[in-house]
Image (cartoon, rainbow, N blue to C red; front, side, top):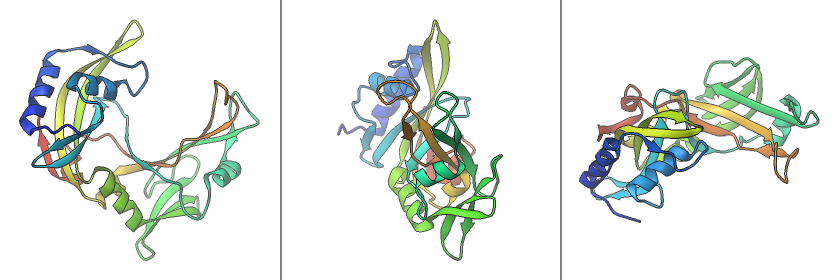
Length: 236
């Protein structure tokens, strides 16, 4: 793993920002991360800083509602196959296959009646459909996973984006060094996605596709950094 000083990271990011608009290295959603890595000259999305440890490099499109996936894990007490069978609805292209795409927030019921609820006595986070508990996560597990994923810290880079002739371009304009996540706060600021779909093309077309149940942070901003991270330092 390449070792950097914070000064080197700042210099590289400043040089990239001064280039203005740069063409995406890929045509799909992951293009922003690959473009950032290519211009920084790194092969993996981790940077070792002497004073901060290993930092994960993340990028995000500015002024978009996109979320950052922390980790995926099926709940205890029920399988995703059971959730699909009980609560799924027919896919528009393959109606014989049930799909289910739901975004759920803690303490707030969504349009289909799904919600998350913390039981402090049992130390669990339950996934409910109206009043029925479908499955649950142990809070100590969730806190551990959050700390494992970005507890060591991350360098988060924001970019403006635009499209020209079907190709996306980025202008990297802002970056933050974020460290020491509060493992309890992330539950308040995260959303839970059930992502049970179907392949629409290729050899697996018409077969169920389990993207995993994901905990995702809502769009990180300068306002949420102090709530989530003990260290939040702008570096671009």
